[in-house]
Image (cartoon, rainbow, N blue to C red; front, side, top):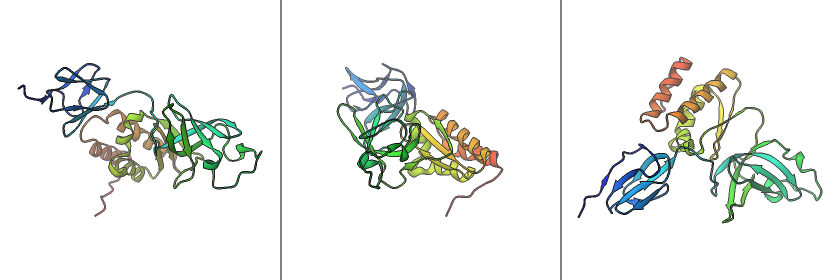
Length: 238
């Protein structure tokens, strides 16, 4: 019997059709498929293995909504039932009256007094139907309308690296730049602070994380970058 083996390395960039592994011991997951005795990539992305399970994380593509995701959305329409939102996806979302606010909204009220056209909000996806109808809520901790600050867009598939394990990467950027940052799972990032120079530095750091997310030792490189840019060294908490 042929020996199963990995052909591509962890975090290696692969192209559609490229062989990642050979043999029946490995299992294909998202972004991969089995062809005879091989597991091949279905898209352009990074190889990720978990035990014997192999997946490919896309390097490009729009956001695919998932239940419980926290996203940053823009109000694009207001109707009698609530607010329609753009969420940086092929699909729009709906914020209904009962999920829009904890306040009582009387019939015929001017809904733009709560969220106007063009407003950006932090909301949570509560449902994605099989027809890709997306419902969101504003009733939860940290969910709110955004005021001021700056919005930047990143690849939604790089968001986990920007956030880091248990929020470690984004906390590192916030600590060195003294900024407030909210990272939406849909690839929109809100940055706010009292010093425009710090906002610019935080933006550059997040873009650097996005561009170098596939390279090992990322946390140390970002820490060194921020130390050099701010001329400060912040020790780890014991």
